[in-house]
Length: 112
Length: 117
Image 1 (spheres, rainbow over the protein chains, first blue to last red):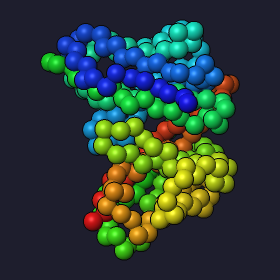
Image 2: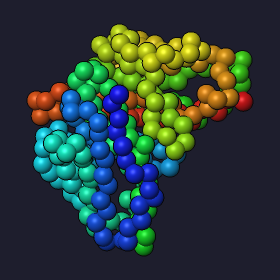
Image 3: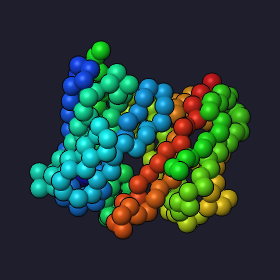
């Protein structure tokens, strides 16, 4: 059974610090990896996608993928109170016709 | 532009009502999805349409009936719902490739908050 695991948190980080969110997955046949941000009562918003080993940077966000260790992480630099949200990790698999397997989400709180 | 629109934003209905949720995208995406999301849970896949054909039905009760009139539109028809069906209903569409690699990156609409009385 394909699984994606995240620490549910809450993860509390001071404003201006680096927030580090982690996600592990069970199946080595994984293809693509996504981080979504979801504010309370709103829909998920795509933050980052990554499908090759290594780092991918976009503004204050960096996604890191390590397929050998089966984890993907999201770093948020210079954290702002507006970054407070639930971050959902999702993984797609070719043999599941690229449907997403979701983690339970990590609640991030940025303290001013 | 990665916009998916959904109407209505909020819907309150009784258990005997018939209503429909609507979703639209003009990004040329060929796959569209319906998800159901309960509070503090990740989205739960209901249906997938690929090239306007229903490709995945995740054992959803028949009181939910999807329809894809064309490549840009997706409807979800609701009939005889139960209070436990109250949730945020999300539509998404996916871009098949990113940088030449198949990724099926999904973009979500704002959702419809459904309350069944």
